[in-house]
Amino acid sequence: MAPMGLGLSNVKGEVNRRITKHYMDRCQDVGLLMVEATGISLGSRVSKRQLSITRDNIPGFKELVKDLHVCGSVVALQLFHAGGAAPVEPDCQPLAPSSVLVPEPYTVVPREMDRDDINEVVEAFIQAAGRAQEAEFDAVELHGAHGYLLNQFLSPLTNRRLDEYGGSLENRVRISSRIVEGIKQDLGSDYPVLYRLGAEDILPGGLSLSEGMEAARLLVSYGVDIIDVSIGVGSSLNWLDQKSSPGFLVPLAAAVKKAVDVPVVGVGGIKTPEVAESFIRSGSVDLIAVGRAILKDPQWVTKTINSFRCKSE
Image (cartoon, rainbow, N blue to C red; front, side, top):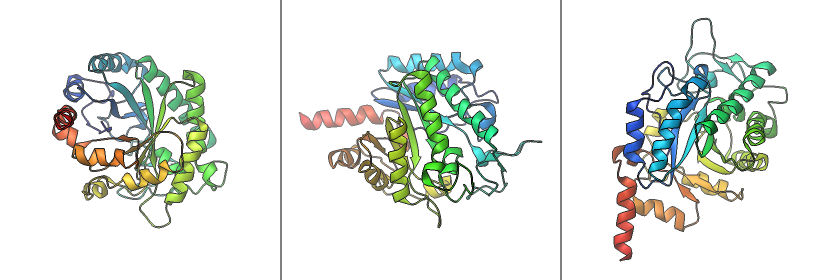
C-alpha cells in the first residue's frame, strides 16, 4: 500500500482514531503497508495537519503499528521534510538547498541552508528514524521525490550550490547519503531503509533519467535496501492527477531496476490485479505499490488474492 497523505492529524502531528481506522480498514492481506509522509519534526511538515514523529507522539505511533501487525502486515514509516515547499510562517522562511523558487505550485523563495542547517536536518532525519524504530516500525522510507527537501537537493533546478552539497550528482546526493549512513550506524545495518526516489524531473533543465539511475546506484552503495521510484521536481499533485494510464511511472522504475541490485518498487495508476501482476511477471519491477485503488476499496488486496486463488483452482 503506497503512502498517501490524509491530512487528518492535528497541529501536534498526532495519530488519532480516524487515522488508525483508515489504516486498520486497509491492512488486511497487505504485505507492506507504508504509513504516509510524516514530518521528522513539527517544522518540517507541508501542512499543520500532517503527522509528525516527535518524541511525544511515539506512543500513538506505537499503538498504530501494534494494531497493524495484528493484520500480518510489515509496516514502514515514510520520513519527510518539505524544505522549500513548506508553508510560510511568521518570522520563519522555508529552508531549501538554494534561494530559488521550487517549481509548481510554490510562490515563496526559500532561504538557502548553511552547513549548520544541513547538519541539523541530517541529525533530525536520523533521530526521527530512531523514534520510528522505537515505535516498532519494521522499516523507514526517506521521501526523496515530488519536489520536497531531499529531492530539492538532487535536482539541478532547485540546487544551485557551489559547495560539497551542489554541482556534481554525488554532491547533490550527499545529504541523503549522510542520512542513510547515519541511520544504519545508529539503528543497525539490518534495519531496512527504503528511498522514494524522484528518478526524473518533468521540467526542462531538471534531473534526467540517466542521472536518476546513477543516483539510485549511489544510494544503494550508501546502504539503501529498496528503491521506490516516483517522479521529481515539477510533479505537483495537479500533474499527478492528470496521469491515468496504468503504471505510468513503471517505465522509470524498470530503468532504475537495471542500475541496481536491490528490489525496486513500481507505482502509478495501478488499479487492477492483472496490470499489477503483468509488471511483476515481465520483470519490470520487484514490488508493486497500489494507492488510490486501495483508498477507494479497502478490500482491494483481499479481493485480488481471492481472484487469483479462484483462477488457479
